[in-house]
Image (cartoon, rainbow, N blue to C red; front, top):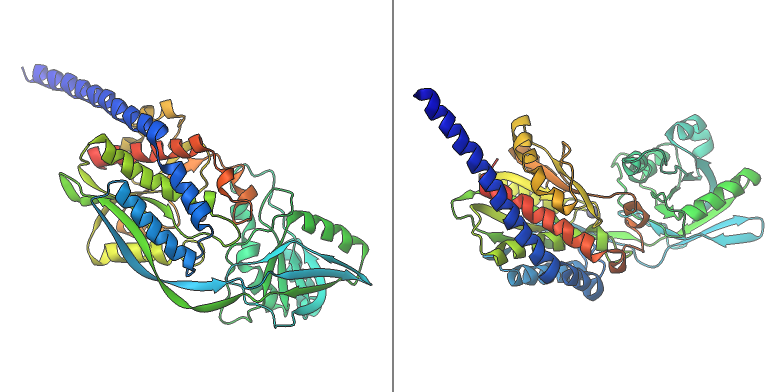
Amino acid sequence: MKKIVLLFSTVLFIGGNLFAQKNDSLVIRNFSDDILVNGKAYENLRYLCKKIGARLSGSANAQKAVEATARMLKEAGADTVYLQPCMVPHWVRGEKEQAIIQTGNTKRALKVCALGMSVGTPAAGIKASIIEVKNYDELKSLGAEKVKGKIVFFNYAMRPELVEGGYGDAVKYRTSGPVEAAKLGAVGVMIRSVTHALDYNPHTGTTRYNDSVKKIPAIACSTMDAEWLQALLQKEKNVQFFMKMNCRQLPDVQSYNVIGEIKGSEKPAEIITMGGHLDSWDLAEGAHDDGTGIVQAIEALRAIKASGIQPKRTIRAVMFMNEENGLRGGHAYADFAASHNEHHIFAIESDEGGFGVKSLGIGGTPAQQEKLRSWLPLFTPYGIYGMPADGGGADIGPLRVLGTVMSSINPESQRYFDLHHAPNDVFEAVNKRELELGAVAMTAIVYLVSEYGL
Ligand SMILES: [Zn+2]
């Protein structure tokens, strides 16, 4: 008898599971139809890019983006919309940078941009001999004797053989090149832009100083200019470089994360976070980085509300402030969560571009990953065929210490660094359907977690 009961309950369990999956696939189809037919993500992105534009932390545009996304979240149907304060750095680029290479009487201007958070040059600019190094080993082998008083040109190209991870490998020259060069007495730094693309777009991004090392100005040149300069330096010995930048750091500014929430109907204390970052670099419109992540999170909230489903757990769409040059928003969010004993079960971030989604990155324990992967068949109709381990994102990263399961939208990555932090990261570079299918993926995973927990 016991055996029969066991068998019967097993059949019921499997039957129930199949029924749930069938029902879930219909719910997700409904989200997808709504997003692809009635979606607001693309128009919201157009607004962020074209009506506001660049949204660097501390700028008037960043504040406009706070107000605009609060309004978008209300229109999307959030139960509550609120601003979470955080102080942010306020770095300004100032006038357009100048960079001129001089050999004898020949001068050529390069396409450059200051690295984010760089100090400026004196008002008259600086002029010095330029020396090229390919990497830190070459810099060290030159030693202080050859580096002192010079401008160091880090000409490290992103490695083409790395299918993924080329950016992570190359970006260290942007983040710590100025400190390493200054330790040997350099007076300035220029890096080759961190991109595979060969063009005339310089790419910015944060550089980091060390308080115990002299802060020297740092600039990035386009990859075409890097190639040209490399060829020149092979022929010419005494090449002079003039750089003039008046970028500077102003006092910190009051800013905000923008949060839209749907309260859970059964377990409201269990919180699910989905988001991206609202700030963007000042050279373009911050379309792929990270306007797309922002509008996908708003869209996911809208689609859940529009479906009429009452999620069992609390869902928050979070527009994080200051990912690019400080991560203050991400820290403010996690600090608030920790000090208020909030229970954050799951967080997903979309901050790798708004290209077609290939997979969802997932973290958590092996059991949690197994549960998440059991839902993979629900995603394959939308072009998502994998759930590789280790998801996450910079803004949600600080939640990790609270035991939150980390996840990420993983899009096709090959074109992202062609426009990352560069003047061509504009609305026109985003494909409407790829953007929307990213929102479908975010909606579906958040819905499933809110329904079944982790
Ligand atoms: Zn980003």
